[in-house]
Length: 436
Figure 1 (tube, rainbow, N blue to C red):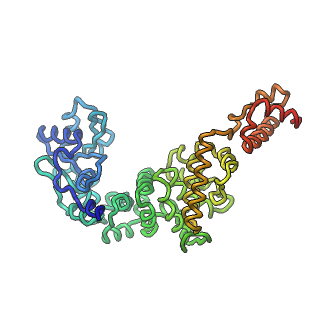
Figure 2: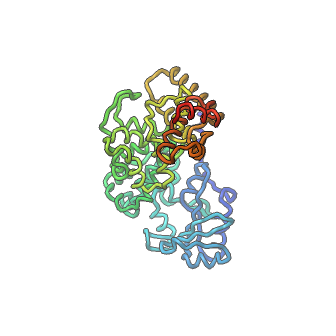
């Protein structure tokens, strides 16, 4: 009940103290210089909702050159100048200031025309000192009703920028809003337009949806509306595959999406959950490279690709954290730095299994105790952790290359079983005793 009251308590009277000082400074200076300038968009929506605002945007009838002149003593970044946008840097914070537009490229002197071309009614809100919130398209009412609705004609809004199809889904997941029927229909009828959007922009919206509080809903909408096939067609293929041992009856896609919110909102972990089952169903010849291919296609950074590939290479089903030796052997394969992340993914699988809650709780508790102790002990799990190295073996007369590698592998396997053996004297004695 308290939560419901809190959600319904909207800040409909935004005051000066609510506005970011840098954004306030920019609008005031532009207004004092004879231009019209207002704070606009998602930051106003968030203030009304009582949610922290992060990105502060300014809309104005001043041209980029005029904005630059007004702020000549400040750093002004003109990267988006040809689109009517410059970035003013105040106290090391970037603020985008854009000239009123009546479509994607044409400039206007009219605030109404500018707001008319915004994506959704909840974002088509502006604020100016002395005037308060300006709402031409019932955005305040849609915030009250928790609805994502395209401004005036959703089809036209999508044609202006097809990325708005993905943004509608992402905002619905982030804000826990519904998408109104006309906007849903507009998306469904115009899915092919997503081909015009750069993969980098698609990736950014995809990532925000994945890290939202309700990614399952987001990906189910992507699937239902016909957009998923343009982003990860491999995930779409999971929709008609059925496997045993799921929590509930359902296909592989449903099972995957039910799991995806379990890990913390960490990009590597959630990508791993999303892509793990794709690797499971992929043909053996393609299995090894499938995750890398997908992430490269969506243009993720190499660090993300490397991490997610390492996390999904393991068979989570058979991983056993109940014995320390198994955990040490796992750490040897994936690196100690990935151990906790792989456990988070295994835990997701355990929680989603059909076993009793008591059984799952016992397994999780035991595993976490083992992992905690291993992280504290820092046992040897790689060649560099061994007390004996290649140089030592060369001094004993062994040949560089394959022979030394085989000996180090045997020593590593021994100390993975019994970490106390990792003493130089002991290891050298064992080598001498075996004669190899």
